[in-house]
Length: 210
Image (cartoon, rainbow, N blue to C red; front, side, top):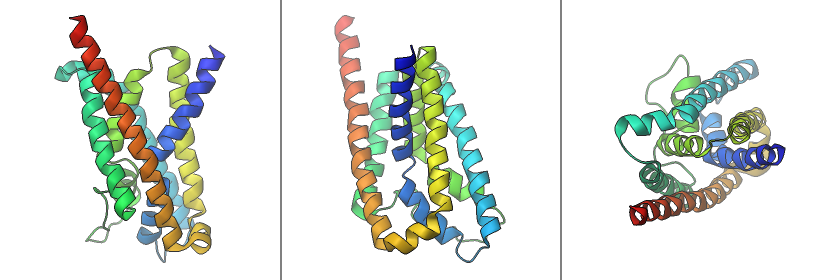
């Protein structure tokens, strides 16, 4: 039981961290908060992380209920969510940005912590689909606990990177952050392929069984 918890926690932390596309988020955060005082930046990081965590927790548990209400299977949703995630991965690999959150807001906002930083920069459409899938896949209590802790850990690591964003920009520069975003996209593409192939295999198996 403990081994299942540990293995799920480690894999979930890595999965969720890359799903959040941390270096792309750092780039957007730097652009959105340019010129703001350190105290305000810290407040934005805290509120955006909490907002993303609340949304992530809801998505983590609502998957099975949503699939049942809509009348679709987990395997079908795997194929759809994986395809959407693959498009995001392509965008990261080719341009270092997510295809759904490439620009800054046109108008000045009083609070950027929730929109656009938490949504859709941190958690976009592809990330939403992937969290729904991962949450629905975990059934046993140790796995659910490991997955939840992995989600929290992934967001905590992202928050640390955001606090270090100024330092990362100085050390890596915009080019370095862009390269790391592209590497993240490459890993995301592999994750997307795994989700799609698992969905296809499950769909074929269920069709054969019937």
